[in-house]
Image (cartoon, rainbow, N blue to C red; front, side):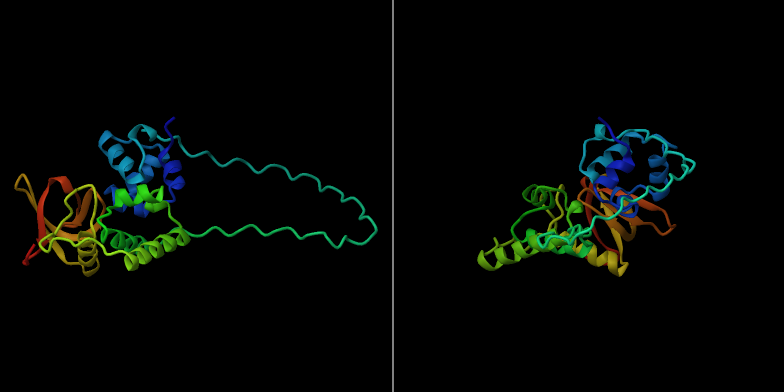
Length: 243
């Protein structure tokens, strides 16, 4: 049964900022979708489904409006406590256990490091999530620390396969390998503009705002943000530099 976008996003533990960055849809538009003020078009349903790791039909095209604030209920009269029984507490009586603190979501740096370690063994994001059993966005800090340790120990015990020297990009567009991940991360942090050429001959230029397994989001000189599908990209390079 389809669910509202907000419920799916909260269940996946993803913030609005992260969803906007990965899907290429503005925060203002996402808020309208979650409040039911605007129906989600088919093309945006596909983007959101890929980022949230669900099927398109799992997302309700028009979310239910948020419930209105209800008037506060009248306070109930306080109950009278029963008089305490006389006598000492038994020695074997145990104190109530404190609830265990839940680990916060994994940091972006932990996820980046995990992808880099996995790439040494030719494991892309999709294969890594299949091995872990959940989306990387759902990992906690404790779980991410555990899997980083697993791959570090594996790297010490096994010899990773050698990569071709001339390899620059992932063979499969569905995965972001370690080289591409590190390259895009470096350009995004440095604010260096990329010159991107599509297979149809169109060109775009601007600094990287965000990226994921299927897209690169850049900001053009006029301030507009453009989402480019990786399947449509022939190659990209730093403006004025080599690929």
